[in-house]
Length: 298
Image (cartoon, helix red, strand yellow):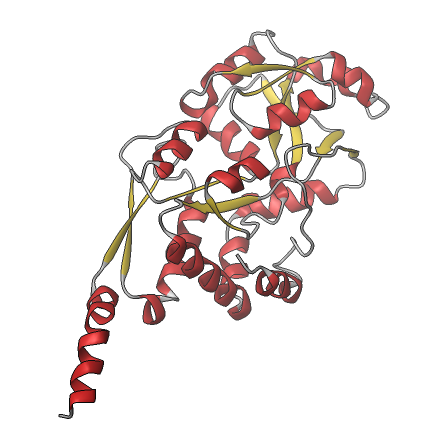
């Protein structure tokens, strides 16, 4: 072996060793339970698997404690965990490294009201947005949605984070608040979990504003952000991502709800996000999102 060959092996050795090692990344989530985030976790694992040859073996482990969004952000910034998913804001994208891919196709920005079943007459099709704003909504205290609604003069009670939003749904059932704007994907899971027969989905209205769920990575792991970007792009191009998305019935129910022409859509802007994405309906038009991903340079 020549001196040049030996030098090459020595220079590559640290990279080859790191590549061969099984890297472990810690994921934080808001809630416990085997079904919480099952789609997001499936996508995360698929993105890691499809990039194994390029980036090496990796394992995702779960942080043992569920925590509020604010606590998750702090945990990633302190290098006590590595990855989370969340609705994005300009501030969050400054605090952490965003993987700018709308995991649920922007459906989180479509909000259906959960109400007490006796309150449906207050939400008839001709009810105006101004009158809806006079009622009391409830949202999580650290959710971006709370700030979006307040910026449009909604009356919003901010509930502290608690396991499975028990405080919010109990307040709704007891008449302390009038409605709970919930995203059209998670609302089905929530109602199935709580099993409160007096709580139902309102039938006539939707709030709509820009809202995208991304994976976020701690600032100490730019290589993980790049890996996820590559992995999501490949999953999109192969059709595997659409297959994963479409196998969850709540995603199909959500799309059917927003396509219902009988629902009044009330469009709001978001003061927390300085851009809107094109091509969020990537299961139907993946090429638009692939082009958008390829145009992102950071």
